[in-house]
Amino acid sequence: MSDLRAVSPPAWSGDGRRIAFATADAVWTVRGQAGAEPHRLTAMTGVDRVAWSPDGGAVTVLAGGRLLTVDLDDPSPRPLVPSRGVQCFAWPPVGARGGFGRAGRLSGPVYASAAGGRTAVWALRDAERPFRIGSLPSGIAARSLIWLAGDAGVAVTAAGGGDADRIVFLRPDARAASRIERLPAGGRDPVPSPAGRFIAYLEDAGGGESRVAAVRAGGAGRRVLTPPGHYTGLAWSPSDTLVAFARQDGEWADLEIADVLTGQRLHVGDYRPEMAASDAPLVIVWAPGGTRLAFGTDTGETAGFVWLATLERR
Image (cartoon, rainbow, N blue to C red; front, top):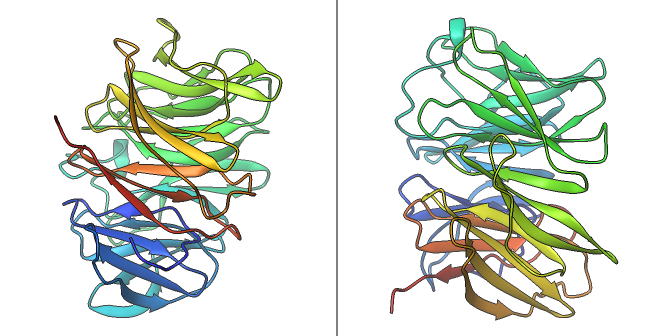
């Protein structure tokens, strides 16, 4: 996308026209097309994640455990929530109709923060203090927070407390209890599909290698999608049945897509990452239209370029 080295994963705007990312000293936006010039939104250091607000008028930034917002027409970052120690966050999808129980309609993202040895998940209400919508079991930490399609709620991926990672599903209906789903033994890095029907994850294949596998929510219908290898970057398409991932092989990385219903795989392309000697995982993000993939190295010191792949029907 540009010659800037990103220290955060890329984030698509809701209309699929722009991408936001952070470098070591600033937050940038760029149109999602080859040759577009990036625009520096604001100067900032220590950014871990960025995301667009649903209306596309601001970029939300997670930096040093603080959740900030930067309007496109005002480069001054402002605190979005009072909490510190924020671990992950997610805006509700465009068109979500309601909030969480008595939290009412939401005015901001849902986020997870740690305090007193436990992780709680919070929602924002208009002109009110954050409202806790759930907690994770003691001893496990949140890795990511994902809004499910429609009004299905949120899914928090968590690690720790056993031989497999797990997902905590929080429903909007206050009368519905949260559900904890553990992956099969040795499973890690779970990613629920947009509608919550499937869970893609990495399973131990021995010898330091893994396989990409998928299972229906509830644990039935496990399907292995790849041979053993070194995989990273699991990401679901908006269609809810296609999962993209990268296979790292020496100095090269291959991007592939697999259909969880048929098991068929499509080779998207291969490239040589600029951080070939690093073990940093690759992060892949689908554009809302489902025909483009933005990807790059994960957050931190292993800064790398943001790449763009476009799928074409032939």
